[in-house]
Image (cartoon, rainbow, N blue to C red; front, side, top):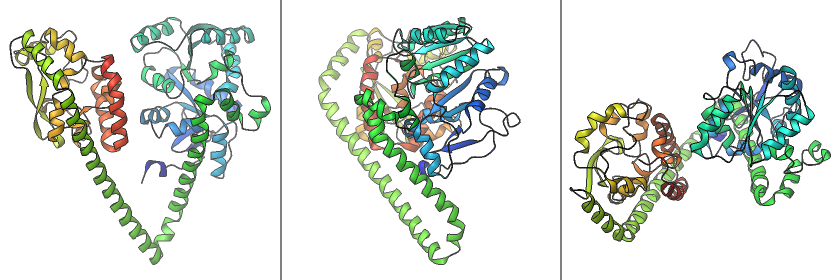
Amino acid sequence: MPRNQQAHLHIDATTYGLSQADNADQPRANLLEIPFANISLESALEQVSNLTQGGANKQASLFFVNAHCLNTTFDNDHYRQALKEADLIFPDGSGMRKGCEMHGDSLIENLNGTDLFPHLCRQFAATGQSVFFLGAAPGTAEKVAAWASRHYPTLTIAGTQHGFFSASETDAVIEKINNSKASILFVAMGVPRQELWIAQHRLQLNTALNIAVGGLFEFFGDNIPRAPLWMRNSGVEWIWRLIQEPGRMWQRYLVGNPLFLLRLRREISTQKFVALFPQQLGEKSQHLRLSFSAIKQRASWRWSHLFHYRAKRLLDITVASLALICLSPLFALLALAIRADSPGPVFFRQIRAGYRARPFMLWKFRSMYRDAEARRAELESRNEMSGGVLFKIKDDPRITPVGRIIRKLSLDELPQLWNVLKGDMSLVGPRPALHSEVKHYSLEQRQRLDTRPGLTSDWVIAGRSTVPFDQQASMDIDYVHRHSLWRDIKLLVKTIPALISGRGAS
């Protein structure tokens, strides 16, 4: 059953974010598979207070979700996982209220971050917990800090930092936050970047609670005026946001809101169908109808799978053929440079594990000295890749001067277009591994062999060798199960700036 047909709204007296014993009376709800706390403002502040007590909840996270957030989870599995692993999620906006009503329930309170912020400042000032503001454009976090100090003089502001920093500056930003001794971190980087940033770095932070607050800094920094109170109370604040920023918000609201309602209706229809399932099976006519429906769905899946395979292969052949023709002058120049730089062949050949680990001959431009493989054993102790599966070291002495340049720009991989044309590889797919690496795979990681290896993949775009192997494998497995022609095209387009930047290349 498709993912968006498995979700169901459920409100009970179970825990959300804390222990069963501590919150047995706190209800929670689910919309489109994302759980959130359906509680009053008073209960929300109490749960936030519990999260900041440290101990087992050290580095806890608090996120907010609205209709746009739930739509985003359908396109970003990492964001979806970050929400599911959050300690606490509060509902934000009229879309969440509408979703509850469509399921025959009600939203107890709209706990959006902008309305909650003054209450949190008052609570943190009373408990003596210091806060750090991270995010938005330079100068905005300082204006938010000034607002908080003006309205809550006893609140301790540990520090501020704008959100326009590069990945290489992340460690320095985290060190700044930790050195400030802040207890609470407000992160305003927009959905889903802020949630993913917190999920990725929460264990490096010494803060007790990390809160993703979206556009809150823009409002309290007086960059964007907030909707009048009557519009907020009427649940049409989104219209005000659309008027303020039509170029950025039209797709979120004019396309996103109807899409959100469509997904909710599909969710409700699925629940009703599942509820009636035993009764339908008891009727012979319904049983036959379900059988024919299952056969139809199975045939439809097989046809779509076959269509995707052939479309993917057609894309591979077309792009690889054109690229080999257009890049032939570049191939000649690279061959001359390699031969002039060091003795040895122009091309490097190596047996790699292909589809289902079947061996094939992979081609690359030679970027190392001829004795590189023989010298690897003496360099194993310097391996910088965690997990012991892959081998990468900085300033590898086996790489030639020309090799460093072509590896930085991934030009050494270009001969693999021939592998794509032959059918050993695809343009998009998990990078081909050595059989010596495959033997270290866990059973789950072997799923990355269930499709042809490719020239590029999600983790190549995300940072290549800077991405730990376990995360590489997880992203590859997600691709194996959820690949599509459109996803391939988007990955190919994103690969171009990733290669130009040279990030993670070695």
